[in-house]
Length: 236
Image (cartoon, rainbow, N blue to C red; front, side, top):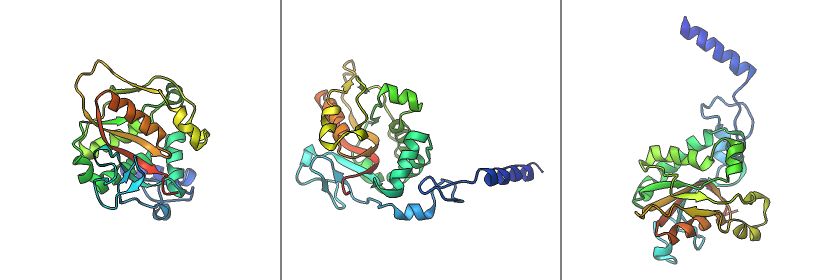
């Protein structure tokens, strides 16, 4: 009887508040709130990308141009269409389904390549204090926690931190983004052991924020072989 009542309640809730796809807003019976049509529109990325020289590595784990200076990027898909809308819903409306689903898919798609980097920690890109307070969360931390569960790599929030609140990158032209993130990060100088780190963020567009964080960490003696994001916009 209890199960019947529970099913009845869920049916009523679905009628009053029908589950809508966070990509297109249409009704969906998918448990992750993402309809099959929206998933089909995502340009899934199966290749690794080098953030230093913007080269698609086409199945390789090594950049022949940057060699040891390469910064390997692992993303689920292109920041476009349904995936872009899902990430916007995640960041600004707190709908975390994209973080759960696509973190799992990234881990499944690139598991061996990422674990081959032998990272000690996943490092979420710190969010500006005012923005994190307003949202109530840092989206990069949520993604990192999901990835950690699949990759068995712990998350560390104590190495990299933000020292000033810059303007949101999305509001700036491409040529102003690098200047906007200059000197926004710092590291904990009290940590003497230098780790192998993978940075995590929701999306990379120009790469300015990621590259600034990498520069600060490398100046402190850390190695950054890779970056993981839900999406990137380099092919658009």
